[in-house]
Length: 588
Image (cartoon, rainbow, N blue to C red; front, top):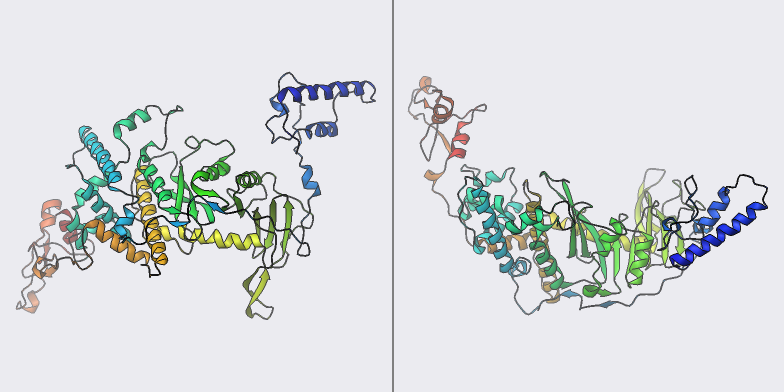
């Protein structure tokens, strides 16, 4: 690649070329006075379009040719795919120099309960700020005409509200209101912890930012001063800082993404979180929220800048291996990471700029399983491996092949299935090991650690959807801290289900042995027949029929029914097409 040159020097060189070509044209048999296509391409190749100076940006230079310039990659002509018979040199190993000792940054001697670990991310100070902003939002809504009753929420009650969200994440019902149904199918705990209307009003008003400052920010919409993520702050910053403070990653880390679906009236119905995680366990180290190009300005492109925004050298150190999928991988990104002493490995797209597109000795659809090809371009090695389909991986930390094999079940011509070993390039093996494991923890199949007991529920406000996602990140990271602390003490850790159950109990202020009070039979709202047992057989269908209270009140009818509520002794219809029993008690 040519060295960068100044604009003045480039201008002089170009002018000299033009003068030289002008003299040659006077002695040429070509009377047109125009450059041929070959001359234009030859002239263009003297300047690398990736450099800071580009002839298209210079003024007062020869006019651009009328036709589109041909893009040419001379390096591609020399590339050809190497085979299993060719050896690749192993790149030098980067020294691993983490800024801190990898692992949990907590004392194993201390007894950390699930609530203690969760409060590392949702501290009382953070919840106090949430309460202040929520109370201010509710007061503003009431001033604008909201008719619900509101009492300011405090820290203790807000923790109970969070506990109730986790409870609903573990015991999922079709409708949130079903948690407060007063029927034989009811769950007693939610109603004992918090009234339904109280839960709903808190959910309607949960606010992470100051509403007054929010209005100032909204007034700047369309200007550079507007912050599209203002509603997520300061809680988002608190969570990000806590993720870094209490854990330091091991050598292999991965960049992945979460999709948060929202049904609100926003520009985009889906929000993307770019996440940096520890490959060994899926711990979320850092994340950034992408809501559109207006709120995520890029210089080198979204795939490049989203990775670089997560690589904090001061926090991490150097010598890390970063794994990623084909959305992010590019030769420029990998070379720039290597300049910061970060290795990288990831699947790539053939259409990505500067990736090899040579057809010489390339894999085909008929290539047998386990066949691979590779090309080395300085620190980068590109490998293609035939599995059930072609897999393309780029790496700066691996040789093309070091003897690794994988097992696959294959079917013989006789229809017999058997397990066979196939050669597999080292970048593919390591990518599956360190990236595939993260996807299990972060939302891919089969693990889905962060989605096992998600607290998400329907909401029309996009920022409240992300608030609940922050809860899931905090609870999952708290569990992973617990798990590693137990490993350091050579003790068995809880399962995530048991951890979440205990966390929910502690948030709600109940103990494991505490049971919900058992209601007396007479207090249960159960339909019973109002016909006396000694009624004559021929009269049982008509005797003791009473008017349905719900039909009389809401339908203006005098419908007769045999059924009444055992607890409140009210006669109510209980028919497939008219279930007044449930309607009456839902209303009550």
